[in-house]
Structures are given as structure tokens and as C-alpha cells.
Image (cartoon, rainbow, N blue to C red; front, top):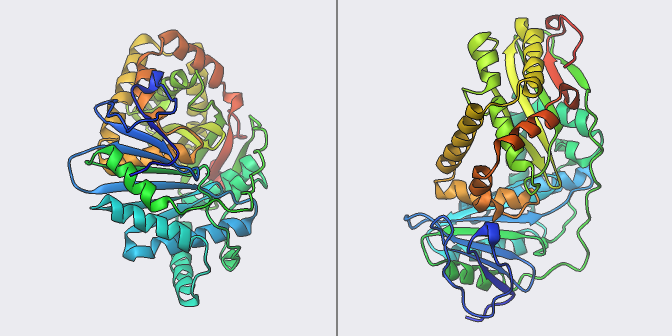
Length: 426
């Protein structure tokens, strides 16, 4: 078939030649996974990857859909609920203030991509029949009420408001906004389709190109979100939860994004601090002091930005002591920087857990789409193990020194006020 747009193939992402190719796809390999990277004439980027031996095809479609107003987020979330009811459940969709991601799986690439294309060009642009929209709204309201019944949901909502104020990153879907219905077609420009199967990647990409060839960009440009406010460190606030038997510590600090040269070193330093059961936070708070059952660190990312996250849950009686212990370990990352053995262990754990976590086809497809949803090149995921392996220990020490000062962190302590035996500080 005639191919529209630009075809690219991956040789080695660390040194990939990303120039236009005039001939048929060449079957190159990275990590034993041949891949085709094709941009269609309408702007849709298609990443087709051979992965696994089972006949099931996995697809993830990332659709940019900024929501500058609360009603926009409600409408986008309702549209995701409609898409999830499409094709008898073969599709599912999630939405936030930046984008929508549609998940699909099936046994035949042409049928699967055709269903995806019909959904986003039809369901995404046309008003829903009243009965269909009522059913989707009822399902969504039930889901929202169930999610909000969980205590951690309220804590995360308040954390977003504490960090970002009135910025759209702090928006939440309210039931009263679910009748807001601005119909806005999806834009293929900036959209990314990830499709994985055991078939030839060129065949998978051809199926996608055929299905989406009629998708045209809308005439009106997509509104952009304003940049988030500058992060202010040292803002630790209580979130009163009278009578709560358990307290939740939720801390954030500025980080660098995955494309930044210092990201791999910071990734390893964060693993030393709290990435596994042998990490410093786990040994101190869980094994030595018994304050927590679990403590975790991760990158809390969004398009254009990233934060370091430290989270732990503790009994009400040990709230202040647990917070003091977290602060002590943050200081130790600078006064007693990661040793060579800690760095080796963090690197081995990161590479091993990444390989295990991404082994299932569905997980790998979701990870690639998640990279696109966060404004990153999905192919960066393929080269990341090599970037981790190449980090000198000195760079990890420098990252620990530069990023883990307690004063860089802000966040919330959700607790019974009686459990806070001292003013909140790190």
C-alpha cells in the first residue's frame, strides 16, 4: 500500500538516525524488538513494535486534549466514559487535564485500528444520543463516588491544590460539571498510536495508516494550558483529619525531566533513598524504627515538568517521629552520599524491576503511551537501560547533594491534629 507521511525505523535509540526514509520499512532491532516509527500526513505518529508471541494485539492511543477550565475536564472525562462503553468494552479510556488515552486489544490489527479510528473520529466529535450519554454519566458518577470514598483520593486532591493553587493541574471532576458538553473533535497533530503484536511491525503500521487516513485536523486550534506556577519549597502544611488512626505523609520537590542529562543519576539516587526494601528510607522507617509498613519514592511527572515524591503512611502516634526520620534521611543523602555498593544495588534493582515490569505486552504498550502522555518521546524508554548503565557513581553523589535538601520539599501531612506533637518542618 502507499504510505503517507514519514517512515522511520529504530536502529539504536541512543544514536538513532531519525531522518526521513523513502523506501519500505527496514526490519531493524533494538532489545530484539523490531520497530517502525511512522508519522502520517495528518500528524498522527504511529509506533508499531513486534513484541511477544501470543496473537493478541495491544494498542494505546494518546490524544492531546488540554482542559483549561473545570468544565472542559468534566466533558473530557465524560467522553472517556463514552469511549469505554464503545465496541462492547473492547475499548477503554482515561482522561486528565492534559490528554486522553484510549486502550484497545484484539486479535486482528485491521479490525482493532478500525474500531479505534471510528471511535475517536465519531464518538469524539458527534453529540451522544441522550440514552447513551445518560448511561455513561451514571457509570462515571458511580466510579467517582467509589474513588472518592478512599481517603487517599482526598489527600491527593488537597496536595495538588496546595502545590498548584488554581492551575488546571489541581482541577477535579465535579458531578455538577458533568452536563458541560463542549463538543471538540480530537486533533491528530501530536497524537501517538502505540501498537504491539507478534506480526511484522510494517503490517501493523499499515493497518493503522489505512484506518486513520480520513482523520483530519480540526480548523480551530487546540487551546494550550498555562504553565504551572513556580514550585515553592519549604511549604509543609497539615491536613486535619480528626480521629484518623493513620497519618499520610506526602512530600514533593522539583526534579528534572527524563530527557535531561542528569535524570538517570537522579533516578538512581532516588532509588537509593526509597526505591526498594533495602533503600535507606525503608531500612530506617520500616526495619529499624517500625514507624511504617511501607514507604515509597517516585517521579511525579506531568507534561513539561517533574517532581520528586516521597510518601509514607504511619500510625497517628508516630506521625511527628516518622516525619523527623524522613527529614533525617534526606539530610543524610547529602552528608553521607550514596556509596558505591548502594549505587550498584540501586542500578541492579532498577534494571531488573524494569525488565520484569515491562515484560507483558500490555504493560510495555502502556509504558510507551504513558511516555507520550507526559510529553516525552516514547522511544526514550527503549534507550533508558543503557543510560542507567552508563551513569558514573560521582554523578549519583552529585544528584543526591543537589536535589535532596529538605528545604526543597513541600507537601501535606494528613493527620489527626492531636497526633502532631511539634510544628511541621523538614
